Length: 212
Image 1 (cartoon, rainbow, N blue to C red):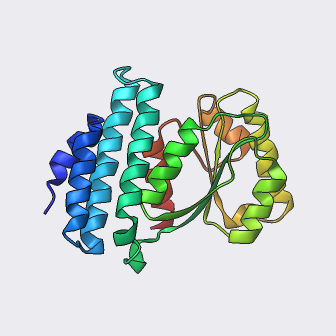
Image 2: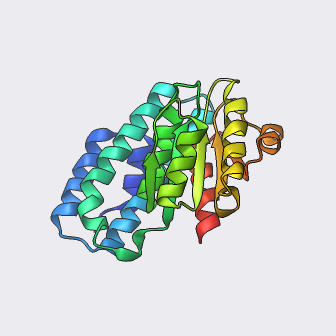
């Protein structure tokens, strides 16, 4: 069996060679879906370490991007094993960077982590209009909508999106989480969201709490 503590540390250290070697060796043993879930959880714990080091200014944005790419590679390698576990899925999340904002680093990291945790993730991309959020929510009926933004104008766009979901009578059927530099508790209340986060790992924990 794979050394989960070593894997967690390797993710925290951004040690690509160790991670990919360990994952490939693990997949070659024809593991169970349950064992693969444990591996994903170990990777998530490693991503939490990355987040903590970023908050301490020991890691930078480039390190976060690299960590997100590493996690995506890991999930791709594990997907054939994970897909064999029907109980893996938590629910679904629609995510996007709101209208007027083109930043997607945080959104992409959150999306990768949510997918790894067992959510179906529908990523609408960047500069997403309120109407595009509404249409996707109508189509896939997610439990959660995640809105991301880095610019201060994102606050108005998030509020407009929540208003659009209200007008379409969809607001009560979904939980809304917002993320990015300009968000805080006051902005969360102003926008009408259920939660805010500036950390992908924390945001994921919030979403998991909603669907368990």
